[in-house]
Length: 299
Image 1 (tube, rainbow, N blue to C red):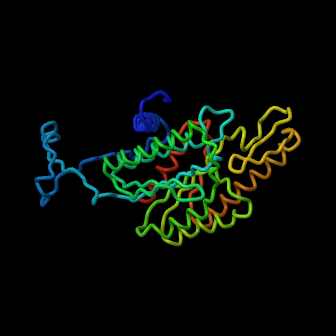
Image 2 (cartoon, rainbow, N blue to C red):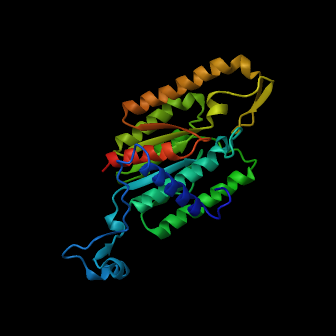
Image 3 (cartoon, rainbow, N blue to C red):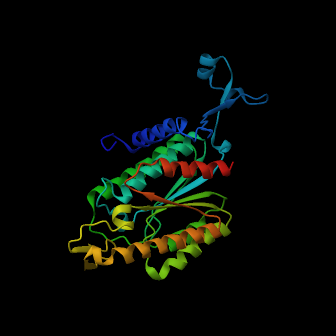
């Protein structure tokens, strides 16, 4: 996968493999009908008929255009420095998040949904509005390729997380009801946890649907499964360091991570926000299935 030439090819491979597996799994009841055309209806303008399809099927099909979009969706991708972390896995959280975002967008495009892209750290990066054309999808993939390069170059620049600020801003900027997918490791300053929950609530207050994916490398970041030799941990967003013996703090650490995660899960449940834990050492299937579940509920 890593050797394929573009983010688009990788996204297609991920989605096609997922759909193939879905059809063979207990989830085969899902309807994965992707159509770039719809049957001709009396009154449709004949200039929109796809004659190549007619030549193959001897039936009239009309090309679908942006105004026929089913759903408007924005993907918010955390690109702060903490997302560059990896230890046991092959991919950093950022690289995993980029491929996951690309795969979601390919699914959306195939379903004729409009997708937009919003990278963020302490500031909002590029704000690409939601559209459903292939040219637009290619524009977003170009931006994702730039993010991949930033992951590979591992810049010394420290990009700190300010998810609450970014989400509040997006809640105000989005004028149409949308599905907002947030991909983040939820590494926020301790004093801002409640503000982040408030920002998520702000999105819901503005009538947006929200799907939050919490990306972590589970063995290192949830379980602290390092060797029991002395280890120096560095905060990737501030550069501060702490030296510890993992065996001495593992139990308390796991407890605090679990409490933190459950706090968000409960808050999300209260405000009808979908919350999914994602392990960056696992494949994309569970996360993609969570999106399809949400998509199916939205009609």
